[in-house]
Structure formats: structure tokens, C-alpha cells
Amino acid sequence: MRDLRCHILPSVDDGAGDMDDSLAMFRAARDAGITSITYTPHCRDPYFDYLPMWRAFRAFEREVRAIDAAFPLQMGFEVNYHKLMELGLEWVERLHFDGSNEFLLELSVGASPSRFGDYERTIFDLQGLGYTVIIAHPERYVAIQKDLSLARELADMGCRLQVSTDSLKGGRLGRERRPALRMLKEGLYAYAASDAHRVEDYAMFAKVVNRWGEYLQG
Image 1 (tube, rainbow, N blue to C red):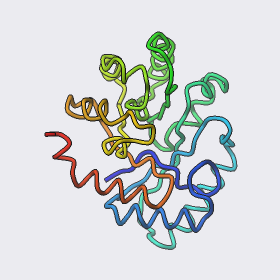
Image 2: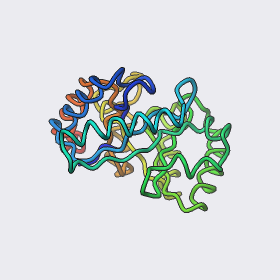
Image 3: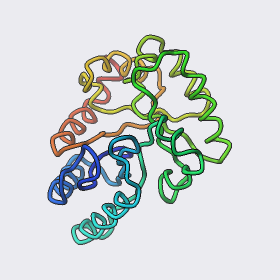
Image 4: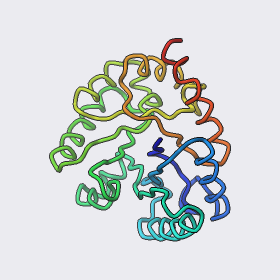
């Protein structure tokens, strides 16, 4: 079971504070049944610092290899749309998931439906460059909460939608559960991810995964 969105790397964003926290989260992820992880620090202000994030990944990788030499590790980024526009599309080759053509894109939580035209143009640009676009936590976006057809449009465009598992229990913003359940039942999600920022988030991940069938039927 893969976790493709989390904030485990030490001291780079609002996730793990130091290496001890990172390793505790890694152990919690394994205990939750996760067998591979893509590490996705925030690519958005005020956190983004490309080279230190890669150095944190290499340092963490060395520590993990001492615990489990065979555990699959992959570096990536959770790329905010506005930050990508600021950096420019020439940055895409440095921000996709290392060793794959996957690109994790975060849209603006409070954007109106009218903004989706801008997102679509960027998504087509990314796809034209050969990337598979994964949309992070669509259930958090106010526009999708108001109009679920926008999520369907993203899926029809070839985007892979990723649910944050805590959303199925209520979410961090308090409005995610209803749209998350609807999208899950419609089969719109391609991936589930922990969005883990601390050890406790993996206990939530395990609870949701263990009740997955209930969420599909409920």
C-alpha cells in the first residue's frame, strides 16, 4: 500500500520537526500497513526551499536504510498552483515525483469555479509535457464542494484525484467529508493518501483504510 502524499521529511515544512519525529512517523506508517512512501514537502510559501528539501530527503533516506534496507523511498513535492506559476513551467522537471512522470498539483482551496479555466490550461500544459497530473485533496476545494461536476471534469481530463483519508472522518477544514464520500462512491478517486504531518495521522489513516468498505456503502 502506497502513501503518495505526506510531510515526513525533517524540518522542511509544517510536518515533522526533526529527524526523531520523521523516524517515528516512518515507523507509524509501516505499522499502518504502508509499504511504500512518496515524500511530498510543500512547494508553496513560506516553506519551499528546493535544495534543503532534497538534502533532508537524502539524510532521511540514510536513516531509513538502517532500519529497512528494502523499503521503497521516493522524493516528490506537493506543488501549489500559484507557486508553480511563480516559478514557471521550467521547474516542472525538478518537482515531479523522482523516477516517474507523476506530478502532484495542489489547487487553491478558496478559488471560485471561474478559476478552473486557469487550472485546466496548466493541466493541459503539464500533460503535454508528458506528466500524469495528480490533484491533491479535491474535497477541500470550495468550488468542488459547491459543484461536484468540477471534480468530474478533472477526472475526464485524465487527472488522477487523491483523497486525504482524514477527510472521510470529517477533515481538517470541517467541510470535506460530504464531498469526499460522494466522490468516493462515484469512483472518482484514484488514490488515497495520509497527508500525515505527525505520528497520530497514521492511526487515522489505518482506521479509515480498515473501514473503506463501509465508506463505499454508507
